[in-house]
Image 1 (cartoon, helix red, strand yellow):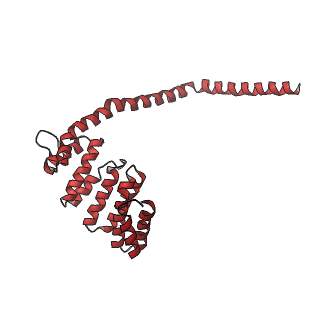
Image 2 (cartoon, helix red, strand yellow; image 1 turned 120 degrees about the horizontal axis):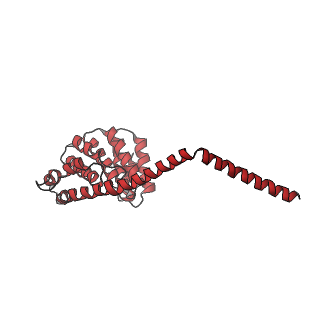
Image 3 (cartoon, one colour; image 1 turned 180 degrees about the vertical axis):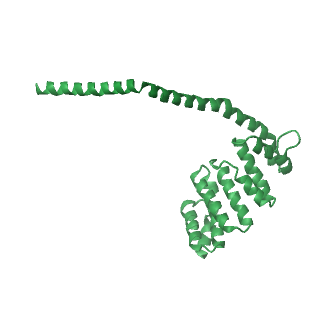
Length: 226
């Protein structure tokens, strides 16, 4: 009898909960419908944006940059940067196709061109337009900015950007390839600044985390000399 009573109470409790839920839905049906409708609109808008806007924009940018990147690979840097009169140059791709992967690559390549030409301020501006979420050109661009500041003998900023580049590389897909050299450059700039303990810490990181790097022996030797 006691079991039956407990069972009945359990059923009543469940029914009460169900009834309260129904009452809440009925009372707030309009608001819930609006919320669910808004969520559906957002999902459809995102899908539509990718299909109708983002993907075509990426394709158009890739078509625009094709010839410029070909010139860049041949070291025909003027043609790469400014175009040949028929095909777009990197500058045009960067300005006309913002937010695309091609524009991000164009920014990096312009940065490299300007850095190598000694146009460090212009290079920094170009590197800064790169998509830093990219696992490869993101760290490379940050390191490029570090190179420019180092050439300008602004070692404080150089150390900051080498550190950012190294951390980004360590966290990305090309960490084992890119990170050791960025850490090493960071250590060199820290030594220039007289921040020896910090430099030793960075070199120790290379020793512990990048044992197969070509800079491993250099890091050990430099660390031992400090």
